[in-house]
Image (cartoon, rainbow, N blue to C red; front, side, top):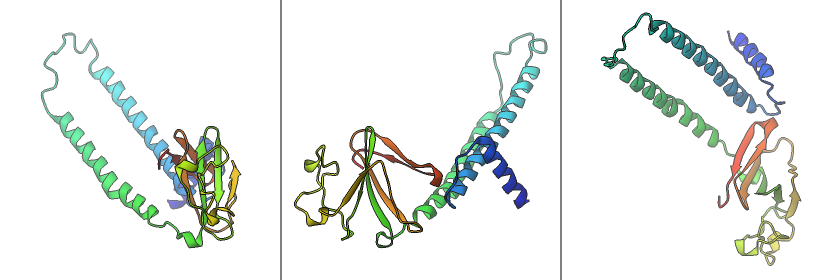
Length: 204
């Protein structure tokens, strides 16, 4: 059964035209996308069947006179409550614990490549700490066209910081921590092959 599901998800992924995957964790993202598509197909077929039933059940020949009183039972209310309970169970029982487990595995900075990225229209400014491994101090008052990150010009730790534009270079097989922010509007930082996406929000 497991092999069948795996082959089915692989075939569905090709059918959906998902991009090349370069991350082991990204496979779970792809599987989620595929499962959601299958769920949408099932819901579409279900609602289409219900729509066909409603057309047949309430056809004007079967109901020549309109019934203005409508349905008198509370079945729809019970169904709505049941759906809300199921959604709450999925959120509290599955989504939140899975998210907490994923966030809990954040790597320590000392064992990682630490990068700072500041988005702006239409560029990504990238900054690495220099040989000392420490970023120079920053302040908004120092932000200028030639000092995008607002690095303190008098801070010795900032003298060896390395800055690039629209390019990120990291060490292979080493965790990467990226601090993302924005100068102007909300931007979306994505590494598609890794299935990573994070909004760059001003002030955060």
